[in-house]
Length: 133
Image 1 (cartoon, helix red, strand yellow):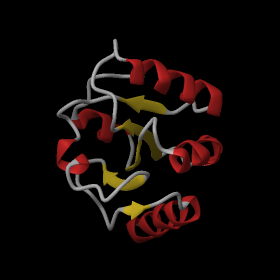
Image 2: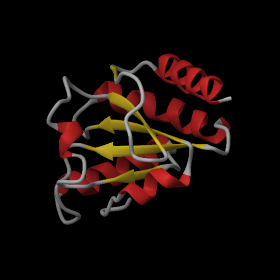
Image 3: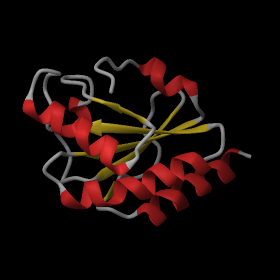
């Protein structure tokens, strides 16, 4: 897990799927194995990023729990704890999981998806990539 986030992370792919989740959120945890599988199947120009909303520091109990969850669910994509870096999103979240889509310039594309709706995430990515052709 990573603790520093800059816009550089988004420049690594044409589209970044950012899944906001919490260690307290069963629907978040339950969708993670499916997200991990999808991450392996994504086109090279799309990346997955997990953003943990309830972890403030690496020495917290929540950080240790988040590490256990990531390991147990088989997640291989990057997960970040970023106090301050994602506040503009976190402060507006209706709940978790919430997934947003960010282009390589750091701009949010389309609407956020609230709830564990992996098929909807996939459709959003497919639609975005088709629009870019």
